[in-house]
Image (tube, rainbow, N blue to C red; front, side, top):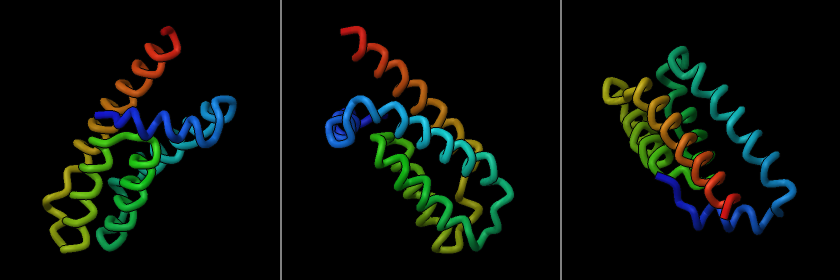
Length: 109
């Protein structure tokens, strides 16, 4: 679900002191985009899922990135009926929980 090597590389790249701020911005932006996803016009869904895919990939949310990549491809092919927006929110919530618990475990060790 989480690509921990990506998380560690990002943390090393931006520094531990700024990592929390980056995570906070990421979560806010993704949650804002997810909240409006159901009202996104069909012609804009590809771009919305592209944004979500890239954001998820940046922070190591592999399952989320994979799901959003498939949704992006479906949107670009005009197969809007294949896109499961509630499932997107579920995968994000699961990924966020896994990320937060994993980060807490790493901080404790």
